[in-house]
Amino acid sequence: MGLYVLNGFYNMDYLKVSFAFGEIEEYQKDLFIADLANIDFETFEDTNNGFDAFVQQSLFEETKLQAVLAEHQSLNANYGIEEIVTENWNKEWESNFSPLIISDDCYVRATFHEAQLQYRYEIVIDPKMSFGTGHHQTTTMMMQYILETDFTGTKVLDMGAGTAILGILAAKRGAKEIVAIDYDEVCYESAIENAKLNNIDNLVSLHGSKEAIPQQTFDIILANINRNILLEQIETYASVLKQDGLIFFSGFYETPDLAIIKSHCEQFGLTYQNHKKIDSWVAAKFVKK
Image 1 (cartoon, rainbow, N blue to C red):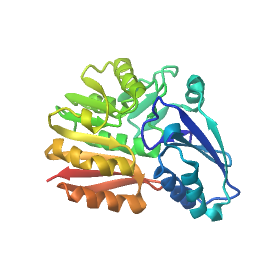
Image 2: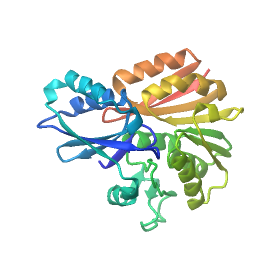
Image 3: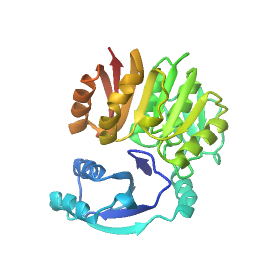
Image 4: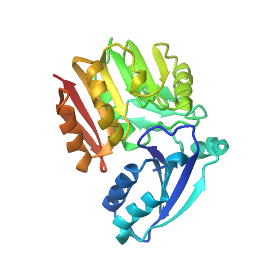
Protein backbone atom coordinates (compact mmCIF):
# COMPACT_ATOMS: atom_id res chain seq x y z
CA MET A 1 0.00 0.00 0.00
CA GLY A 2 2.93 2.35 0.58
CA LEU A 3 2.83 5.51 2.67
CA TYR A 4 -0.39 7.07 3.86
CA VAL A 5 -1.53 9.64 6.39
CA LEU A 6 -4.39 10.92 8.44
CA ASN A 7 -2.95 14.40 8.45
CA GLY A 8 0.13 16.18 7.07
CA PHE A 9 3.59 14.83 7.94
CA TYR A 10 5.15 17.90 9.44
CA ASN A 11 8.78 18.99 9.33
CA MET A 12 9.34 18.24 13.00
CA ASP A 13 11.22 15.55 14.84
CA TYR A 14 9.36 12.29 14.29
CA LEU A 15 9.52 8.79 15.66
CA LYS A 16 8.75 5.65 13.69
CA VAL A 17 7.18 2.88 15.74
CA SER A 18 7.33 -0.45 13.90
CA PHE A 19 4.64 -2.96 14.85
CA ALA A 20 4.85 -6.66 14.05
CA PHE A 21 2.07 -9.21 14.47
CA GLY A 22 1.88 -12.97 14.19
CA GLU A 23 -1.60 -12.79 12.67
CA ILE A 24 -3.97 -9.86 12.37
CA GLU A 25 -7.33 -9.42 10.63
CA GLU A 26 -7.95 -6.25 8.62
CA TYR A 27 -10.67 -5.07 11.00
CA GLN A 28 -8.33 -5.59 13.96
CA LYS A 29 -5.67 -3.48 12.27
CA ASP A 30 -8.19 -0.73 11.51
CA LEU A 31 -9.33 -0.59 15.15
CA PHE A 32 -5.74 -0.54 16.36
CA ILE A 33 -4.79 2.26 13.95
CA ALA A 34 -7.85 4.26 15.04
CA ASP A 35 -6.71 4.06 18.66
CA LEU A 36 -3.17 5.06 17.68
CA ALA A 37 -4.60 8.08 15.87
CA ASN A 38 -6.30 9.08 19.10
CA ILE A 39 -2.89 9.31 20.81
CA ASP A 40 -1.40 11.56 18.11
CA PHE A 41 -0.03 9.05 15.57
CA GLU A 42 -0.51 10.59 12.13
CA THR A 43 1.03 8.41 9.48
CA PHE A 44 1.03 4.68 8.76
CA GLU A 45 2.95 2.48 6.33
CA ASP A 46 2.24 -1.21 5.69
CA THR A 47 5.12 -3.66 6.10
CA ASN A 48 5.43 -7.39 5.45
CA ASN A 49 4.53 -8.39 9.00
CA GLY A 50 2.61 -5.36 10.27
CA PHE A 51 2.97 -1.62 9.80
CA ASP A 52 5.03 1.40 10.80
CA ALA A 53 3.37 4.31 12.61
CA PHE A 54 4.76 7.85 12.77
CA VAL A 55 4.28 10.37 15.58
CA GLN A 56 5.77 13.73 16.46
CA GLN A 57 8.47 13.10 19.02
CA SER A 58 7.20 15.90 21.25
CA LEU A 59 3.75 14.27 21.45
CA PHE A 60 4.86 10.69 22.00
CA GLU A 61 4.21 9.11 25.39
CA GLU A 62 5.14 5.46 25.62
CA THR A 63 2.78 4.94 28.57
CA LYS A 64 -0.14 5.90 26.30
CA LEU A 65 1.11 3.48 23.66
CA GLN A 66 1.34 0.70 26.21
CA ALA A 67 -2.22 1.45 27.34
CA VAL A 68 -3.44 1.06 23.75
CA LEU A 69 -1.49 -2.18 23.39
CA ALA A 70 -3.12 -3.46 26.57
CA GLU A 71 -6.54 -2.83 25.01
CA HIS A 72 -5.45 -4.89 21.99
CA GLN A 73 -3.66 -7.58 23.95
CA SER A 74 -4.98 -10.35 21.71
CA LEU A 75 -2.83 -9.04 18.83
CA ASN A 76 0.41 -10.01 20.61
CA ALA A 77 2.08 -7.00 18.99
CA ASN A 78 5.80 -6.37 19.21
CA TYR A 79 7.19 -2.92 18.48
CA GLY A 80 10.43 -1.02 18.05
CA ILE A 81 11.06 2.73 18.02
CA GLU A 82 13.47 4.74 15.90
CA GLU A 83 13.98 8.41 15.13
CA ILE A 84 13.26 9.61 11.60
CA VAL A 85 16.22 11.07 9.72
CA THR A 86 14.81 13.87 7.57
CA GLU A 87 17.62 13.68 5.04
CA ASN A 88 16.56 10.14 4.05
CA TRP A 89 13.04 11.17 3.08
CA ASN A 90 13.60 11.64 -0.66
CA LYS A 91 14.82 8.05 -1.07
CA GLU A 92 11.86 6.82 0.97
CA TRP A 93 9.14 8.50 -1.07
CA GLU A 94 10.79 7.78 -4.42
CA SER A 95 10.84 4.08 -3.58
CA ASN A 96 7.15 4.14 -2.58
CA PHE A 97 5.66 6.57 -5.08
CA SER A 98 4.34 4.96 -8.26
CA PRO A 99 2.05 6.77 -10.74
CA LEU A 100 -1.65 6.69 -9.89
CA ILE A 101 -4.83 6.85 -11.97
CA ILE A 102 -8.04 8.21 -10.38
CA SER A 103 -11.42 7.40 -11.95
CA ASP A 104 -9.77 6.72 -15.33
CA ASP A 105 -9.57 10.49 -15.75
CA CYS A 106 -6.73 11.84 -13.60
CA TYR A 107 -3.09 10.78 -13.73
CA VAL A 108 -0.89 11.58 -10.73
CA ARG A 109 2.87 11.29 -11.13
CA ALA A 110 6.11 12.50 -9.63
CA THR A 111 8.59 14.72 -11.44
CA PHE A 112 10.70 11.66 -12.33
CA HIS A 113 7.82 9.81 -14.09
CA GLU A 114 6.94 10.10 -17.77
CA ALA A 115 3.94 12.25 -18.75
CA GLN A 116 0.80 10.46 -19.97
CA LEU A 117 -1.08 12.85 -22.23
CA GLN A 118 -4.10 10.59 -22.78
CA TYR A 119 -5.60 11.56 -19.42
CA ARG A 120 -7.85 14.61 -19.06
CA TYR A 121 -6.05 15.77 -15.93
CA GLU A 122 -2.41 15.27 -15.06
CA ILE A 123 -1.02 16.28 -11.67
CA VAL A 124 2.71 16.40 -10.98
CA ILE A 125 3.58 16.09 -7.29
CA ASP A 126 6.90 16.54 -5.52
CA PRO A 127 6.02 15.54 -1.94
CA LYS A 128 9.36 16.35 -0.26
CA MET A 129 8.65 16.00 3.47
CA SER A 130 4.89 16.52 3.05
CA PHE A 131 2.50 13.71 2.29
CA GLY A 132 -0.38 13.62 -0.15
CA THR A 133 0.21 11.73 -3.38
CA GLY A 134 -3.29 10.31 -3.82
CA HIS A 135 -2.31 6.77 -2.92
CA HIS A 136 -4.11 6.58 0.38
CA GLN A 137 -7.80 5.66 0.26
CA THR A 138 -8.90 8.97 1.79
CA THR A 139 -7.08 11.10 -0.79
CA THR A 140 -8.36 8.89 -3.61
CA MET A 141 -11.97 9.32 -2.48
CA MET A 142 -11.58 13.08 -2.09
CA MET A 143 -10.20 13.25 -5.62
CA GLN A 144 -13.13 11.17 -6.86
CA TYR A 145 -15.52 13.67 -5.28
CA ILE A 146 -13.67 16.56 -6.94
CA LEU A 147 -13.92 14.84 -10.32
CA GLU A 148 -17.68 14.40 -9.80
CA THR A 149 -18.35 17.98 -8.68
CA ASP A 150 -18.68 21.19 -10.69
CA PHE A 151 -15.92 23.52 -9.47
CA THR A 152 -16.36 26.11 -12.20
CA GLY A 153 -15.90 29.61 -10.80
CA THR A 154 -15.79 28.47 -7.17
CA LYS A 155 -13.77 29.70 -4.21
CA VAL A 156 -12.23 26.69 -2.49
CA LEU A 157 -10.63 26.16 0.93
CA ASP A 158 -8.25 23.18 1.18
CA MET A 159 -7.51 22.45 4.86
CA GLY A 160 -4.58 20.24 5.85
CA ALA A 161 -3.45 20.67 2.27
CA GLY A 162 -0.16 18.75 2.44
CA THR A 163 1.15 18.69 -1.14
CA ALA A 164 -1.96 20.66 -2.26
CA ILE A 165 -2.97 17.80 -4.55
CA LEU A 166 -6.68 18.39 -3.85
CA GLY A 167 -6.46 22.13 -4.41
CA ILE A 168 -4.51 21.59 -7.63
CA LEU A 169 -7.17 19.21 -8.95
CA ALA A 170 -9.88 21.70 -7.95
CA ALA A 171 -8.05 24.36 -9.97
CA LYS A 172 -7.86 22.05 -12.98
CA ARG A 173 -11.61 21.47 -12.56
CA GLY A 174 -12.28 25.20 -12.92
CA ALA A 175 -12.06 26.67 -9.41
CA LYS A 176 -11.53 30.44 -9.52
CA GLU A 177 -9.58 30.74 -6.27
CA ILE A 178 -8.03 28.17 -3.93
CA VAL A 179 -6.71 28.80 -0.43
CA ALA A 180 -4.54 25.90 0.76
CA ILE A 181 -3.67 25.85 4.47
CA ASP A 182 -1.34 23.56 6.38
CA TYR A 183 0.19 23.75 9.85
CA ASP A 184 3.57 22.54 8.63
CA GLU A 185 5.98 24.96 6.98
CA VAL A 186 7.28 22.30 4.59
CA CYS A 187 3.72 21.52 3.45
CA TYR A 188 3.13 25.25 2.98
CA GLU A 189 6.25 25.49 0.79
CA SER A 190 5.41 22.21 -0.99
CA ALA A 191 1.99 23.56 -1.96
CA ILE A 192 3.61 26.61 -3.55
CA GLU A 193 6.12 24.49 -5.47
CA ASN A 194 3.53 21.94 -6.64
CA ALA A 195 1.19 24.70 -7.81
CA LYS A 196 4.04 26.02 -9.98
CA LEU A 197 4.82 22.51 -11.27
CA ASN A 198 1.22 22.28 -12.46
CA ASN A 199 1.01 25.84 -13.84
CA ILE A 200 -1.60 26.80 -11.25
CA ASP A 201 -1.53 30.55 -10.57
CA ASN A 202 -4.74 30.93 -8.52
CA LEU A 203 -3.74 28.86 -5.48
CA VAL A 204 -2.64 30.73 -2.35
CA SER A 205 -0.72 28.68 0.23
CA LEU A 206 -0.97 29.76 3.89
CA HIS A 207 0.92 28.51 6.92
CA GLY A 208 -1.21 27.75 9.97
CA SER A 209 -4.38 26.03 11.14
CA LYS A 210 -7.97 27.26 11.42
CA GLU A 211 -6.76 30.67 12.63
CA ALA A 212 -5.13 31.18 9.21
CA ILE A 213 -8.45 30.94 7.35
CA PRO A 214 -9.09 34.33 5.65
CA GLN A 215 -12.10 36.42 6.61
CA GLN A 216 -14.06 35.48 3.52
CA THR A 217 -16.54 32.84 2.48
CA PHE A 218 -16.05 29.75 0.32
CA ASP A 219 -18.22 27.75 -2.05
CA ILE A 220 -16.45 24.46 -1.33
CA ILE A 221 -14.27 23.24 1.53
CA LEU A 222 -11.98 20.19 1.35
CA ALA A 223 -10.69 18.76 4.63
CA ASN A 224 -8.81 15.46 4.62
CA ILE A 225 -7.47 15.42 8.16
CA ASN A 226 -8.21 13.13 11.12
CA ARG A 227 -11.39 12.81 13.11
CA ASN A 228 -10.28 14.66 16.23
CA ILE A 229 -8.97 17.68 14.33
CA LEU A 230 -12.11 17.77 12.17
CA LEU A 231 -14.33 17.76 15.25
CA GLU A 232 -12.36 20.66 16.69
CA GLN A 233 -12.50 22.69 13.47
CA ILE A 234 -15.93 21.95 11.94
CA GLU A 235 -17.57 24.97 13.61
CA THR A 236 -15.00 27.25 11.98
CA TYR A 237 -15.47 25.61 8.57
CA ALA A 238 -19.25 26.07 8.82
CA SER A 239 -18.80 29.77 9.62
CA VAL A 240 -16.89 30.45 6.38
CA LEU A 241 -18.92 28.17 4.09
CA LYS A 242 -21.54 29.91 1.94
CA GLN A 243 -25.17 28.96 2.17
CA ASP A 244 -25.72 25.86 0.00
CA GLY A 245 -21.96 25.42 -0.09
CA LEU A 246 -20.39 21.98 -0.12
CA ILE A 247 -17.90 20.49 2.29
CA PHE A 248 -16.04 17.21 1.83
CA PHE A 249 -14.43 15.44 4.77
CA SER A 250 -12.13 12.44 4.94
CA GLY A 251 -9.43 10.97 7.16
CA PHE A 252 -11.58 8.77 9.36
CA TYR A 253 -13.31 5.38 9.54
CA GLU A 254 -16.89 4.41 8.81
CA THR A 255 -17.32 2.95 12.29
CA PRO A 256 -17.60 4.71 14.66
CA ASP A 257 -16.29 7.95 13.16
CA LEU A 258 -18.86 8.73 10.47
CA ALA A 259 -21.79 8.85 12.90
CA ILE A 260 -19.78 11.11 15.22
CA ILE A 261 -18.90 13.46 12.35
CA LYS A 262 -22.54 13.54 11.16
CA SER A 263 -23.85 14.39 14.62
CA HIS A 264 -21.30 17.16 15.09
CA CYS A 265 -21.99 18.65 11.66
CA GLU A 266 -25.72 18.85 12.38
CA GLN A 267 -25.01 21.27 15.22
CA PHE A 268 -23.60 23.76 12.72
CA GLY A 269 -26.09 23.46 9.87
CA LEU A 270 -24.12 20.96 7.79
CA THR A 271 -26.39 18.31 6.31
CA TYR A 272 -25.06 14.89 5.34
CA GLN A 273 -25.51 13.99 1.65
CA ASN A 274 -23.62 10.75 1.03
CA HIS A 275 -20.28 9.07 1.55
CA LYS A 276 -17.75 6.87 -0.21
CA LYS A 277 -15.96 3.93 1.34
CA ILE A 278 -12.73 2.14 0.49
CA ASP A 279 -11.80 -0.58 2.92
CA SER A 280 -12.79 0.90 6.30
CA TRP A 281 -11.98 4.49 5.33
CA VAL A 282 -14.66 6.96 4.25
CA ALA A 283 -15.05 10.37 2.65
CA ALA A 284 -18.31 12.22 3.20
CA LYS A 285 -20.17 15.04 1.48
CA PHE A 286 -22.16 17.67 3.41
CA VAL A 287 -24.08 20.79 2.36
CA LYS A 288 -24.75 23.91 4.40
CA LYS A 289 -28.48 24.51 4.78
